[in-house]
Image: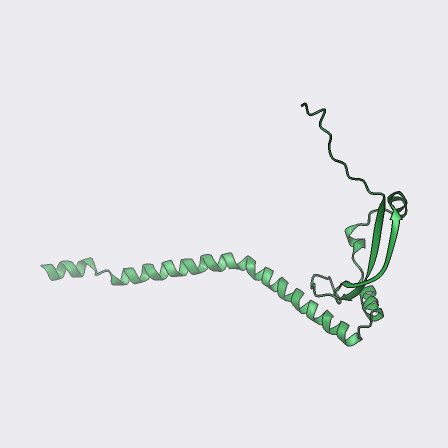
Length: 146
């Protein structure tokens, strides 16, 4: 059987189902600022569309920057979901603290190799000094043996 006769499997879709879930206060501190949000498990709405209609209606692909939700919009979403300002502020502070700790940790990792080399050098240097002190002086040995 030649490769020209091999049929590749195809997958086709007639419809696409779009599910909309509620938002909840998230736990990912990777946001640039503000409180993180996440999708909850409560289904708010469901729409089924023909694939051809969906492809026309969905619009152009968005850039990475346009995919992120600005901090004030995230806060408003959380307020609309019933979260208090105090809860949102606490989540913001926690995310900021974790982000700051991650930056500090990353900065320290760059010094880890330097510190490791420095420690090895110190140990070798100390060991060399100790062995130098432990060696008896040759002139002293010669004087005692004579």
